[in-house]
Image 1 (cartoon, one colour):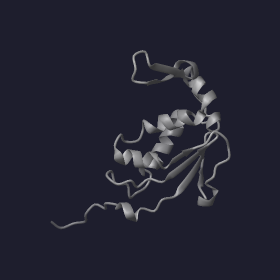
Image 2: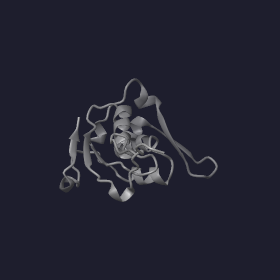
Image 3: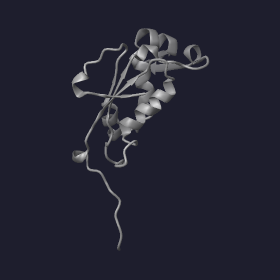
Image 4: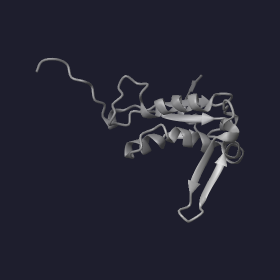
Length: 144
């Protein structure tokens, strides 16, 4: 067979960059899609489905993320303890008041693959409620 072969990235050859996203007044879904694309590596021409080619993402000002419509009061997050009657439900407003990072982390987690590969991609996500973050040494590139 004559011709060129498709490029397949190797895990040890991938160069990872750091990106900084400010969540102030951004819609939660659009922010999550943007972060998930970077975490999975789909923004790179060397994207390979079976290799983690993604980059690190630092999200700041999680407490200032915006939601459209009535999602703040109507949308809920549920978890179950495993015991009878152990279902706990919180609205997005309650979650934003208690731990705003959890809301963004949970939405992005739903957008990465549900496999070992997806878990390694998700570990590259860092979310902070305020504007301060400890990753200045990595010189993250600001994304609008």
